[in-house]
Image (cartoon, rainbow, N blue to C red; front, top):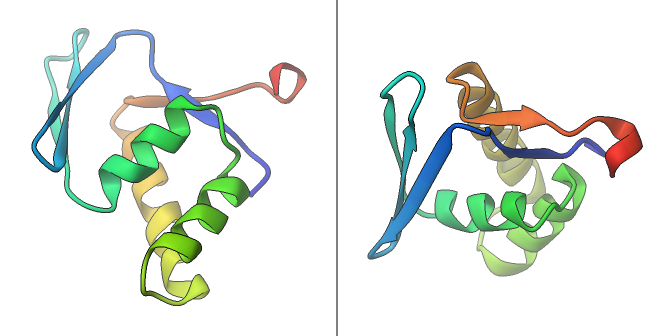
Length: 93
């Protein structure tokens, strides 16, 4: 959970209400995030590690640490699978 991800180079995004809409220019894929997804996206943009993101989520949301950890991993895996985020090399942290 010390890993970091960042938005992929060909991704643009916009906050609309309490959601984030992500567009991959390269693939044309649209992807929407509903709470707590927008909060996770904002923390990814800030360069936080997955552990740091998890700590924020646990502090801000009424859910257990294990549940939040599973949800975070699931979302980051989905974003990576769709090419919307990329891993930040360890030497660039």
